[in-house]
Amino acid sequence: GAVVSQHPSWVICKSGTSVKIECRSLDFQATTMFWYRQFPKQSLMLMATSNEGSKATYEQGVEKDKFLINHASLTLSTLTVTSAHPEDSSFYICSARGTASQPQHFGDGTRLSIL
Amino acid sequence: GQQLNQSPQSMFIQEGEDVSMNCTSSSIFNTWLWYKQDPGEGPVLLIALYKAGELTSNGRLTAQFGITRKDSFLNISASIPSDVGIYFCAGQLSSGTYKYIFGTGTRLKVLA
Image (cartoon, rainbow over all chains, first blue to last red; front, top):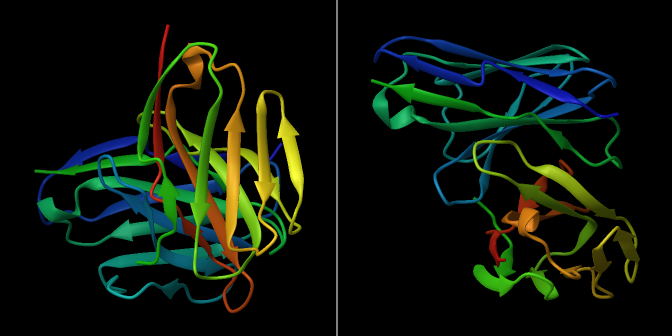
């Protein structure tokens, strides 16, 4: 149980393009989803926390207008990187949990490369 | 962003040896989680700890929730080549957003 699916797993696009990443909880209802960014050989850095039906809470230094998060249902959250530039290239990983006392489970990540 | 201190940063060990790693923080957590991440994939949950002093095992892995609630330990016994990867601890804050703070990671390499 507790499977989280993330799509796409890999995307390459031109600078200026907007990219949408989906995160789905397949066998449980995700009250909360988290979006992380990970640079090579580094730890996971939390970008934002989203609760179903409400606006995401962004971490300090993360641009809300740059990284649009939608959590419209208990099984789906999306991260849209708007007008992406090469410096946005990274490994983006989502996670989901049911209640606050349950552990978060991760998707397999999306490798984003902006040319 | 906030991170936990995790040590060691990396280690090379011989197959069959035991491994220990730990995480420490100045903050109090109400949950500790340990994950393993393979290259190009998302972290996979290994062990979850919910009470101070709790000792939990998952096969060859054993983790403990420190009494002070500011640290946690992970031990791997009789390591095998497939234990290679990066191990992360994560602590859940006891108030506010209940978000998780991740450790800096321990990169494990096992020599056959």
